[in-house]
Image (tube, rainbow, N blue to C red):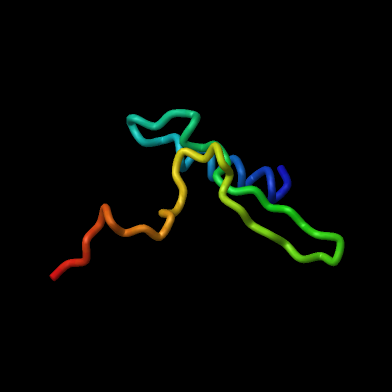
Length: 64
């Protein structure tokens, strides 16, 4: 098994071993693209179940 396939299998196993885990938990959450000049861009997939917040912390007021 090559290292990429080994990594993906280990990732899948880790994300699906919890008692309530589903296959959806192991779905990719990012998209990596590369431009002609070799610059790589990493974006959160629109269909990702979990993604970073929008930066609007209204739901999480600062602790005082």
